Amino acid sequence: MREAVLDASVVLKWFHREGEARAEAAGALRGDFEAGELRVIAPPLLWLEIISVAARRWLWDASQLEALAASL
Image (cartoon, rainbow, N blue to C red; front, side, top):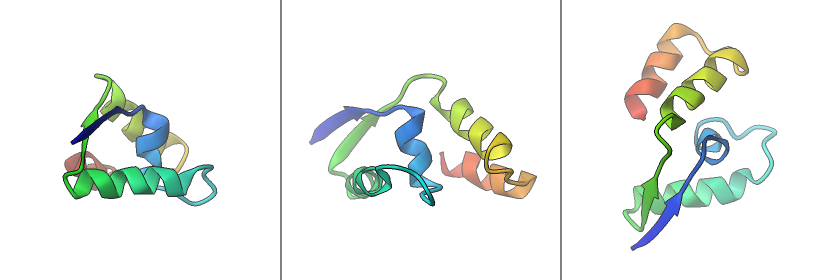
């Protein structure tokens, strides 16, 4: 099994790809992760960074943010 340390810029593309550079590469990593072929190592604040971007940049509402938090 492969391992990768992912930062927020990569994982954010797993949830919002429109207009993002290298979204296809990030999507491939997500596919490998979901297939059990990739072990992801994440910095401790990754989850907070993702939710912050979804709230501030993407303007997601509370229900969307709750669903995002649950999926993380």
